[in-house]
Image 1: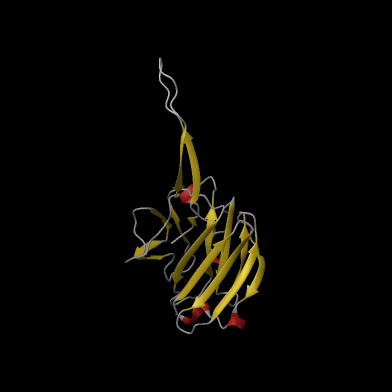
Image 2: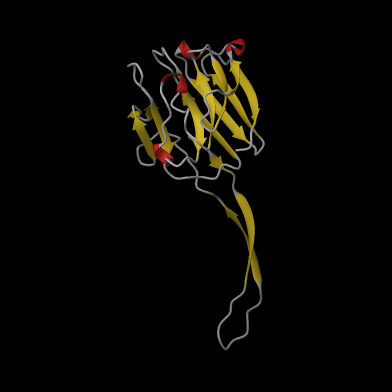
Length: 205
């Protein structure tokens, strides 16, 4: 699943008007406007996702790359959504991982859902403009950090090993991300050991 915008309530006021008649009395009502959301509770489908280069569906999971060298892949939701505030959850597992990692990214680049960064240490992200990404790197230890606008280096490189997070373990990890308009908070949990890592990144998306 990817960013889910927060619903907002709006009060609408209206009158009826017609030629030759007086205006009606004003009436009002409150409506809750729920923006479109991304929700794949039973896994991903090809309907609303664009998979690029080496990315593919493996059942209801997205496999970004295979086991061959120099592969790169991205998977984007095709419809743009507001990201002034959002909460998103997803699970991932790294199997037979040699290098390098991946990111969770939000972007509004000119290439839209066809956006693709470089392979290797670029993590399929670097070079994608107008973007923010959280790094999950298992080649340089077990690190995370925040990338901005496709830059080659994250804002901070944080080792998660102290929280007993080992991305190469083959375990299933749950990522919980919350953006409140001022900071993006990552909670990463190893679902098999219960080990958890939490970090907030100040950012204006």
